[in-house]
Length: 427
Image (cartoon, rainbow, N blue to C red):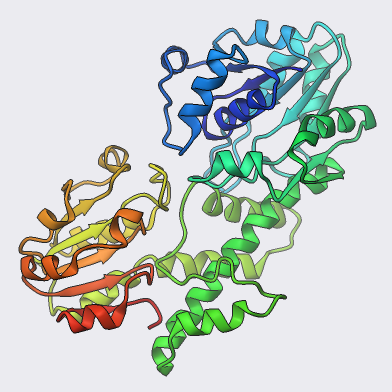
């Protein structure tokens, strides 16, 4: 099958590479000439484990190509994926200008009946609007299918190739079947729905997971007040099959490109229908508060943070990505700098992206170097590199042996035995 994927951002590039690996001929399109030139040379603009190798393999086997010529790619492809960004507007809604620009381009260049797959995260009703816009400019019938993505940064390639489910929202039986057949090799559950249901499934799924995170963080804060251990509480909850163990890890809040944006977007969709989502609104408020919990713990320990050297372990919003969008580290670092602390950050991947966002902090390549003379260490992102540190060595380097474990990954008793004062989340 000949497929065009318009947009070579996170979703588009992963989808394009994986679809090529399934045996399709894929043309990836972008307006950014420098990005396309780099991709042709095998340079991947994002950090995602396994993606660079997958692109290189399919480029060698001539199944994936990169171009800025959207018109040619559209004419040569039977199926066209829209995978452009839908940035958050000031009111929390998704900005669809890029989606609509692609739709107009498809309409003007469709030389035969086409199937357009909306892969971008869009509000309910967008697929029908996209088709209307395409048909204003097209002489040929073009069907539009909603196919939301459920990729997690850091495991996106695996998520695409081994998905929990694929959701296809279609009004045309023929178009729905064509996309069903495209995903059939994955041997997963494939759900065919209306476009509206497919679009809402994406937002509802992320809002629910975000709510689960904020809920366990609320219980973590309560655990501290009553003398319970959130790790034990979460384990006990997770053993109930109705609840499940996933997303019950207490910490210093969620971030990234999906949860914060989608939580706000679904609120905007509901408000437009005069139905406020009070639980989702609370989820967002709890998360904003949770991000600053590590700073609150430091404020309890020190009468003043002015001049204190604080080491942040991890900057990315989660491990195995360089994504800094809505990362907890931003709120933590800014709050510490505002209070006059000397902040030193260590992150194996996200450092360069962090420099574009964070001001007034220093960086180090080594945890052990950063620990020299430090008053406290705060774990923000649970990179593998930080999980098995030599804390005996670190203890000798620090001025004050304070550990704030923002992800509850360290052995509290071991650290206490080494002379550290340990602060966890809900412990």
